[in-house]
Image 1 (tube, rainbow, N blue to C red):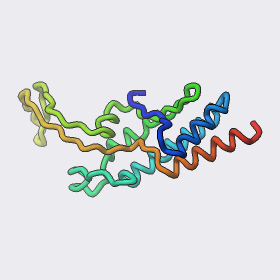
Image 2: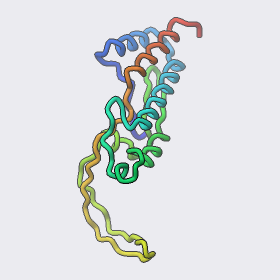
Image 3: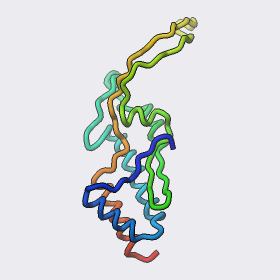
Image 4: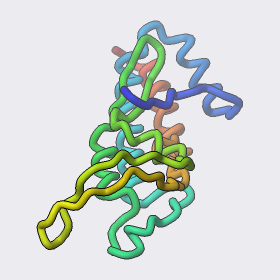
Length: 164
């Protein structure tokens, strides 16, 4: 997985409750797999809604074409999102090499090597080496929503108290 965000347990009381349940459960793998599917579905919803709880900054391409931000690129990222369970840890991430650039944003000058380009007339032209300024805003798509936390809590509670 090229880029992953762990299901971290922090100060939020719901997350603390989840941490306590995970400590009690010897082998939470099946429950974590179900929670991973919830996370994958949540990411798909984030792409569909173009960010949540806050919408992403609209891209120039989407403004000009009327399509969604991070699409078609988003389809590439969205299809590489997977969840993996390792012991008592759940990793939700994307294996696309551009996923982290979009999730965390990217602001830097990038060097483009000399290359050829075919123009509309069909003629090949030489493009000199140059630099371009990249300024991609953050568009976080792997975010655990409050409802995801509630569902995770319910899954773990059922797994902890129910028959296996």
